[in-house]
Structure formats: structure tokens, C-alpha cells
Length: 151
Image 1 (cartoon, rainbow, N blue to C red):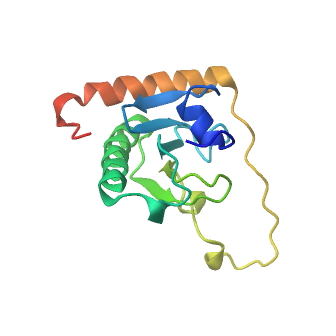
Image 2: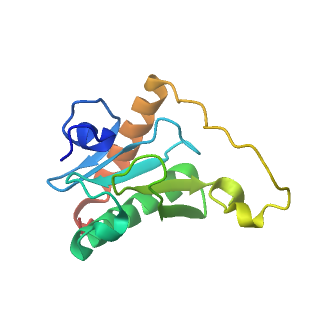
């Protein structure tokens, strides 16, 4: 783990996070600037700068947890689709985003936007009490999936 990496510090519980799932290798927590309510980040606890650096087995565990969370999110947020992507834009620590998609533009590429030179801003930070409620709801739903978890 890195002493300066934000996500390593979250994995060590040096920085608070609204945790949805934690095991020996993975940590899933709410993004504090969510695209949509329930926007979750899944990280390996060990530091890997980019997703292509992840051992295949660990990447598979992240995907499996993402699939479990997607089932839960579809039911909780009544959405047809949950976006799953590795981006690594802001923090150089491999991480996956899961976003309940209420609209196709929730995670679209700018390649599909007709207007050029758009200005993007960070979404507003979600209030901590709202994040705490969302995390509790997701943990409860994830726990309710029981033995079919596979993670």
C-alpha cells in the first residue's frame, strides 16, 4: 500500500468511507461525488496503479462483486442497467465504478455528444448522512443475497 494514495488510505481506514462491502482483498464504498445515488467504487486493498496491473483472479473478484451489486442496485433503484467501468481518471489506484443508470448519458462517452468544447464540472458532494443511509441500504440488500454471493 502507498502512504500517499487516497484509496490505500481509505483501505487502511485512515480516511472514512461509506463502506458497502469489505473482505480481505476488496473494499466497496460509495463515491462521495456520485453520478447517481448508489454510485459505488470497488477497489483492491493492495495498491495497483491501473486495472491492467491487477492479477486476473483479483480482477475477476472485482467483477463478481460488481455483478452482485448490480443485481442489488437494479432492485433498489428500479433501473434496467448498471454501468460497470474501470476508469482511473482521478486516482491512480485500480478501481471500478458501478452506477445505477437512470439515463443513457449517465456514463456516456463524449464521442456521442454533438456539441463540442463542453465544459464538465464535478458532481456536487453528497451529504454524509445521505451516503450513510445509501450504504446501509446496499449492505442490507447485499447481505440478503446470502449464499449465492460467490465473493
